[in-house]
Length: 204
Image (cartoon, rainbow, N blue to C red):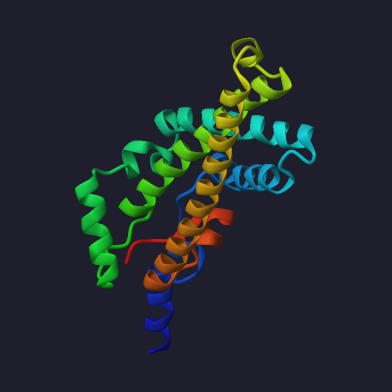
């Protein structure tokens, strides 16, 4: 009996490492946490520390550009083709999730994929509107030549747009965190931890 137990252990290892698979590559993880830090910095300091706000915005836009490229040529779960689904698929998944019967995905599930796309669009709009505002009000930045002649009314409208985008982004981040928490509880896995380590458990 003792020999059979030993043989079974050798044939079917049960270590934590053997039960995990790397899903998120280093670039995706660095992008995720750096984008979060850069947006939080820009949002918190606003224009009280204008130089820091501006450079945080530049970092956000640079990160977005890198992520867009990586979404095409990156590792399998980083590519948009792995997680971008049509609206019908997303709605069906959300309905299944509310009924607690949604399937588990190694990468982003359809709702998570839709959230990634939404966040990329909104944070891009926030950064670009900030660049336009910086050019219109401070006559600085890469759009200064284009925006320096706009009226004060237009500059104030740009400020409203930039503020709206930033606040909308914050609301989406909160929704994103709620979705991550819900999915973590539903599938009994630490999705936040996975974005630090890159590893998730293998599919059941």
